[in-house]
Image 1 (cartoon, rainbow, N blue to C red):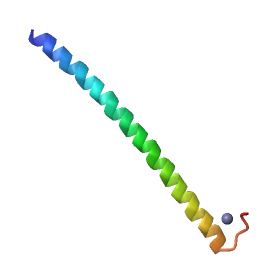
Image 2 (image 1 turned 135 degrees about the vertical axis):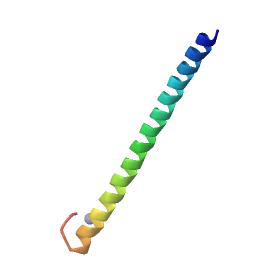
Image 3 (image 1 turned 90 degrees about the vertical axis):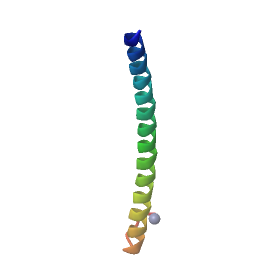
Length: 55
Ligand SMILES: [Zn+2]
């Protein structure tokens, strides 16, 4: 009886870990996408600041 309960708990934990892991991965991708966008904007502004031809 206890063994079954433990195994069930382990399965719930594994499910929770994969959900949290997927959420963390998604947030990380969104974060890096936003960060890359900010980095691009800064680099773009810097190019104009030093009159570097960019477009
Ligand atoms: Zn530009």
